[in-house]
Length: 69
Image (tube, rainbow, N blue to C red; front, top):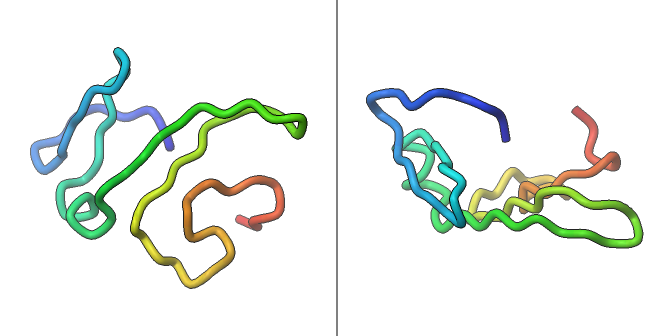
C-alpha cells in the first residue's frame, strides 16, 4: 500500500471516507480486495487481503516482519 495519484487506467473505490486506487488490470486479477485496520497485542496496522496468489506465505497481502522484502 502506498500513496499515489489516480491514473487513466486505475479503478478507484471509497471505503469509510478513504479513496483506494488500484490498477484496473491488477484489480481484475485480485478482486475482491479487503482493507481492514486491525489492532492486536502484537501491534496495529492494515490487513490487505485479496485473491492474489504469490506462492509464498504472504499471499494474503498482510505481510509483517516475517515476510522478507
